[in-house]
Image (cartoon, rainbow, N blue to C red; front, side, top):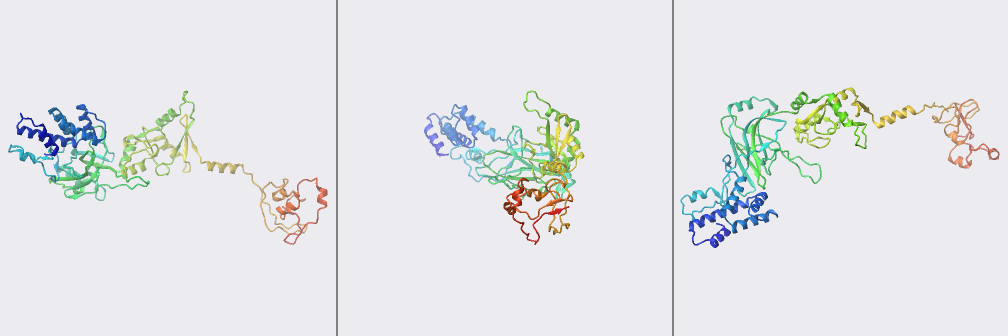
Length: 531
């Protein structure tokens, strides 16, 4: 008996009650207090509200308030409410076996109770509470998985029950395989070496009867099948700083460790007890590959080109209430998953966008790491809602590899969108004039030495000034019709000449100018005629 229960028994004992009745009430009080300590926040709030107490505050405040309520206002009605809340969480239907006996010493009431059955009854108690026996979780439904087809249920969803206050718990279940089930496993084809298409899998989820539950592993999980530990998927490393690695919660294949005979199979699940409730189930399933699902997708879920055009027209239909009129919708032909050209365009029926992703790559990625999320808008993309875009499939066949984007028009038609750089190159190619290349290395008849370099003119031959000669103001055309280029004129000469080659009115000044200097090639600084 705890100190608080003994104090209550000592202070509240009435003369009219026998010692046996007081002892029974004290035992019930201990049981009720231990039940309250195992309650969740919602259970504590329900209990306090039913007795007219405040249900606000943290869990430790709620626990203290509920314990004081049990100690000070103990009554059959209060005990009934406590038991109902406890039994709603820990049903007493047999189904699981304790993997090990509790290490805590059970509380026996032989010293307080004259009944000969008190000792044997105390052996079935743990800290004053009757030991909870795990039971099948009522109405817990696991979400169906695209890569697994359930053939038979070997063990329905059953809750994992903590046997003591330790953080690490062991729970055990047993099941048998029929001869037909064993034959199915033996005769199944191999997906990979050692991996058969018919498997026995273990699935774990939260214990919640609302909706369907996704696979969710408890902390510190380990699975032992017939005294041999089996493989549980590990954590995915995270590339983002500060983000913890995530473990993929998927069915655990326990087939290689099973007895394919009439021998009973035993599965022990080790799990961390940190306040959340979990349920476990065992199924006989058929496993599909990404290619199998792709075949199903091509067979059952292809949207026709006509229906796709109607969808496009609905999106581009003029809305008089809208201030912005949409005349086209651009769609990329590059898969957002792998940044390659689409092979089989696929999208989700519930998504609002027309952008597609590659069906083959999407299924292969979900086979390795199941997320089932649309790579375009990050919304759920279950396999049942995937569809192949028939119109975009035709467009991919009609367009060349260099077309990476198209635009849908209001009438349901489409046009290719070329790259801006390519369009700029074509525009430059069509608008650039072609100039003749002039060779200035031909010896002249006037005795001047030929130029030591050649260049291509930047203007049309026969025009006023060409190249540097036009900038210098020299004669633009030779007497023979060739272009004249001054090869010796530089910026310093221009400064000395005061802008020679400028206006034709300064003829008198130019007449008084000194004689021309000799070039560095030992010939007169003069103009060379280029033909």
